[in-house]
Image (cartoon, rainbow, N blue to C red):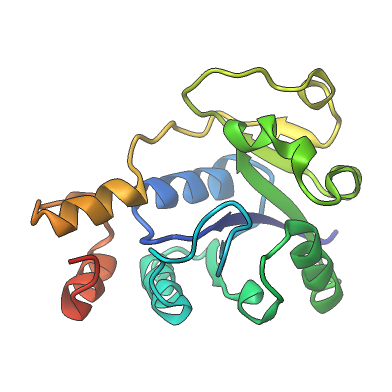
Amino acid sequence: MKKNIGLYFGSFNPIHIGHLIIANYLAEFTDLDEVWLVISPQSPFKKKASLLENHHRYELVYRALENFDKLKASNIEFDLPTPNYTSKTLAVLAEKHPEYSFNLIMGEDNLRSFHKWKNYEFILENHKIYVCPRLGDGKINEDFQSHKNIHFTNTPIMHISASLIRDSIQKSKNIRPMLPNAVWQYIDEMNFYR
């Protein structure tokens, strides 16, 4: 049996306890053996201007995961051409790690627009997708609701966002409970988001 790896993509700018709760839930309460948090240098749908440099975001994720055996930081996309497309990342990972089976983790909001992703049919046929509930309206494509490779999870819904954390730090608000201690220390030490 191949090891079952869930890939949780994001800019993690910064990583916060909401990300950790979701990743840990999936590692503990689904058939995933590990969850890799894949730090994306640039999403095709996001502007790069507000992002911390790649190595700083990797350091934040690495520090946040140090005490979680089933959670890993991945910088696989740092060396890939931008913008990063999930289908390309999956192909590179499959080539580098034939001993693993790679699966996607996404929110319901992403599943609603999944049909717009590059090579989404190929992804769907060759990888499982673990879908986390999100608040908000919008219909999910009927084909996706009953697809054999799409698994809806009971992951807790988190109301914490990285943009809230960045804005709060800029306004000198105390948001330390929303961040793993090691992440807060690095942000504070490096004077990020101020």
